[in-house]
Length: 462
Ligand SMILES: *Cc1c(COP(=O)(O)O)cnc(C)c1O
Image (cartoon, rainbow, N blue to C red; front, side):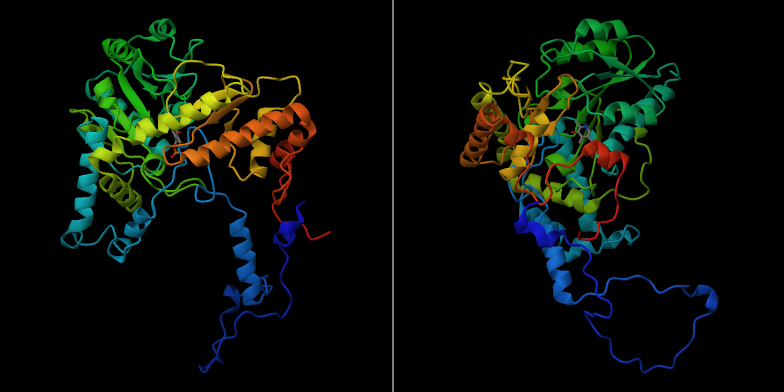
């Protein structure tokens, strides 16, 4: 345990009788509450002075890690810097205090925000219109699949019960299909990481409702056969669903609509400037091609997470049409630079050109027994968030790195230097890496023990 943080770990700060505030004496007559609503025992509330409470929370906030602290290369999550201007606009009292049931004539500004956002998202993705109601990526996926189901049902085509999902897909894709009552059929990846068209063709028939894809895929590879794939699925009567949670690499480069996709969801909380992690609030708007608008389902009685939408619009408009075109190329440049700098030490299982993220399969030299988990833990010692590890499931030691477009060359060079250092340590002092982290408040956690026997209260100091 690191002494610098020791005081942070003492949770039991309560001292009987200690007060943070005292209230003025009650001048009003005393009314006893009926016995039936009274507590049997006094509530066990902490008794602390104000300074102790302030230190407690301030020190704990310092144990947190976010993209505002340092590089956060969590592949597939697009943990990118969210400019503060967007938070400031979303925090404006003119928007903050709106109520969804307010008379319409008092909400013209908010309505204009929603309309404009639908329009710019449609333009960015090449779709006809968007619904902003879904409150997360997975919620968007479910909404999109309901649209697809509604479309097939409207044509009396009731035998379409299957959704095709690549083996590298994000876990929410098969989960959403299952929640929507559809059967998941997995399609294999070829050794080069892209979709195996022969395997796909063998699975296409008139029971296919849709195929869900993301392009570039989870390995960061652009599916060059995308128009062929789309044509095959369309020819068998299925629709194409685009998982646009991480639209970063495509911004300004190409559009799902132009690739032939029928339904798209976006994660405004990944690509469009809302901080995420910790569970929300998010926004997963769904776009459709012309003709599918009538099938927008009611997945939310109100308007979605409006302040997330407002941040997204503010982000898009403040970048503008010209600058937003730099996002995808810069995200790709940064990721590729890191990949090229590190591939002599880390195993690159898929060699092709990648986009905004890429996957290593641990260290090239596996003889030391240093694993991806050890490297991820050692990164914490140097003030980095770990990359996504052990996902996708295609390799045993997967380590998925996505730096995003915002990092400067200096920041990326520092990260590369630390990754080189860890590779050197793994060769020279493997125990140092295997026992990391050493500089964090808590050292290596036993994941299995923590999952099987969670201790949900902090132990007394011992
Ligand atoms: C994050 C993510 C999702 C799910 O989004 P949530 O908002 O967490 O539900 C879906 N697909 C991909 C590719 C993602 O990265």
